[in-house]
Length: 163
Image 1 (cartoon, rainbow, N blue to C red):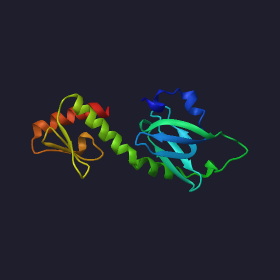
Image 2 (image 1 turned 120 degrees about the vertical axis):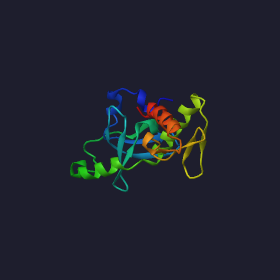
Image 3 (image 1 turned 90 degrees about the vertical axis):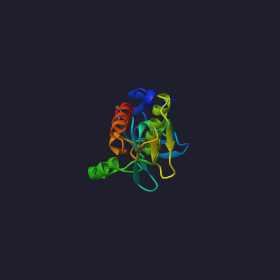
Image 4 (image 1 turned 120 degrees about the horizontal axis):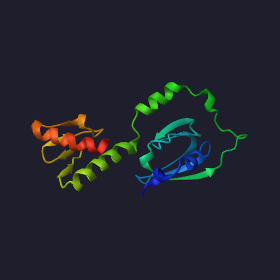
C-alpha cells in the first residue's frame, strides 16, 4: 500500500488542525491534532492533545490518515504560536520507533530482491552476505566487516536504498 504518499498536497493540507487517527505500518495507531505536514516527505507532526506533547511520524510509516474531529478555529485545543522551535529540532533528531523497522524492512527487501542472503540478529543487527554487519540506522556508515572489498560493495548497494 502506498499510504499517504499517494495523496495530493491539497488533500494532505486539508488535515491541518484536525484531530486525526494515523494507522501505521507496524499496525499501531496515533491520535492527535495535525500541526504540520511536510509536502515532500509526507512526515506529519501531531500534537497529543491530552499530554500536550508533539510526535514526528515519518510519512512512509503512515498507511492511512482519518479525520476524527475537523479543524474548528473557534475551538483551539492547543495554541501552536508559543511552540519553541528548538523543540522541533530535538524532535527531528529523534527516531520514531517505527522508523528503524521501516528502514530495516527496506534493507531486507532490497537485498532479498538482489538474492543476497540477509540474516536478522536478536540484537537488531542485520548480517548481509554472511560477512557484513549493519546496525541501526541501517545506513552505509553503520556497516562493518573484516573484508573491505565485500564491505564496499554492500555499502554501494545499500546506498541505492537510502537515495
